[in-house]
Image 1 (cartoon, rainbow, N blue to C red):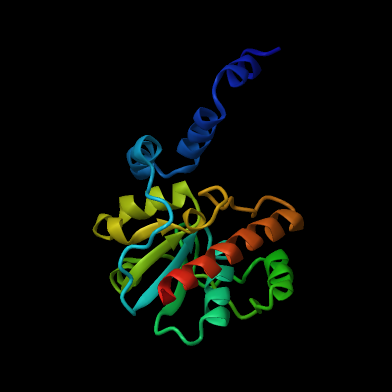
Image 2: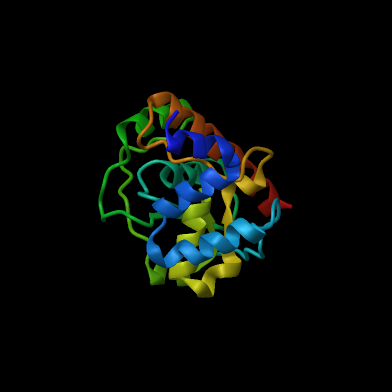
Length: 196
């Protein structure tokens, strides 16, 4: 048994996850990530969202946030809220991942016309609610836009499952499918709470 394997077996899974998240997070967000790990974000309730814009945020805006935006628009055409999506680490104009397009069709949404956009100050300023997919997304959003701290939540926190919806980008089509089902569950609960 290598020293690394032995160390992994001694550390609790939450500590290993935090180490992985710290490696993934941009340097400016690491303190925020540590604070989140120590205090965590509140579960199951929304900050006051008004009737403005909801921005769904993930790493690249080609999978999770793209389908969240599309599902919100499909399931809540009667709400006054407008949906948008953005990525923390993306370029303008990337197409939705092909696996995501396929799985999106299974859920009744079409992503072939989706184009990525980076999260910027104007998008944040115009948003009443920022909905991120995982703890690293939350830490980076809060670190880059501290004025939006109280408007940012994790979508998974609205569901009974884990708070994070893992990024399936490096995974299989089944990983995309699992993530999309978690996103759909979260969007459904978000809509329910907004209508309440």
